[in-house]
Image 1 (spheres, chains in turn red, cyan):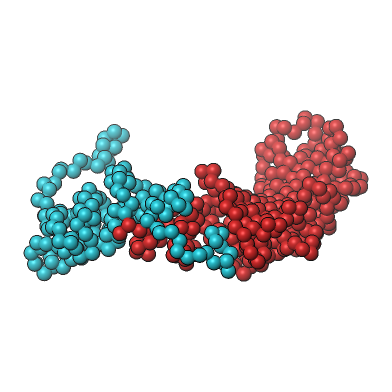
Image 2 (cartoon, each protein chain N blue to C red):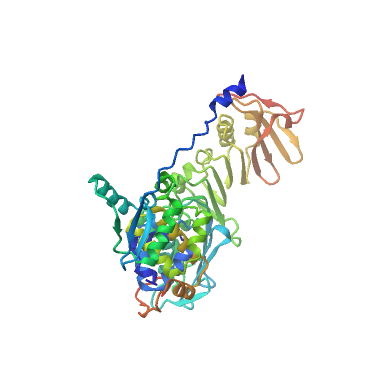
Length: 339
Length: 177
């Protein structure tokens, strides 16, 4: 015997299990029998692609979708789907897609390649620059079609960090549920550089398991009707809103001083006009530059102190946990108060 | 006191057992070649082990084992591998049976990589028929390693796959069409 295709199926299965993703992709191309054999294998018989990062980018100007996958040992896979040329380019090989829609081809490819991903990703990054509905282009349907594909298969992606960069919340809401909530630690909601003061509502997002279980959240959209109850479980967060009340700041203070998990947060508001109320609640501040600072003891902690820094000039509000010895001498440290 | 306690715990060097004289039997390949092998080496093959047990249970003298699906050249390689591994702990092979990452010991790596691909395929297929877990694993891993970083053309040549005989279809969107 001189040909691999005459080997027993169990042996071929084992060879594929021991191979790396790149070799399996190449093997699929060597002949039709091999391709059918590989495509009929159960996911558990496929090798782990061990991708660390996957980036999915749509670009309305160039009318294209790209996938960049970074694997172990600096292996790198680049897929590009061009609507203008109606083609796919994979690691330099260009294929004409005839009468197929490139969005559908891209999603089908992604679904197939994700069968190999068994380890957790470090980061999954979406960049949707395609919201404007252009009648002749179907690229704007990518987020919703991705969402449909994941819903249909019941598959979730295990990733530590999920980043979505876009300029409309209609492209955030369908994507968040793609991430496996057990693996997800960090949620990033980023606006495209060109969009300043873009507003989003997070009423739907905050109900998701992904939101509730994540530890860190970074959002540089302006959140309309931000509710402090929806963000107080994060250890770290960055968020912007129109305004915040003294009562809400006090709620956050209470939540943080009674928790040992908090690390830091940054809150930017357009208007903050409850200075008087906050002084009534927290007493006189320690002043340093443009900062008004308050120090609070944390429940059951001798070493750490919560510092709240309201920067009047920029309307930035920082919450930070510092070591007790770093509290300025003249500052008042408020005792922990259960109520 | 402490050193005493330690030394008491240290495993005692076992007195070397007088090794039983090797039990040699003849093994005949499908093309009529007759080879000789130590029964302990043959026990690595689950199928041969069952045959040997059958003889022993019935107290029949075992003079010659017939292996009908392996040719002499390949059988010789199988026996060489088994001879090398006849003293392995069977638990190791069992533990590696379903593992995704296995390590090929240096002797095996050398033994397997020097073979032309066609002979390696025959050896793995023989190991499959004779159900020799360790040899199947190391063989498959060697094939997988040799495929790393190869282009489509290189793989066709390496694995003896003829040129594609079918025109790729355009009806399905898979990335190699």
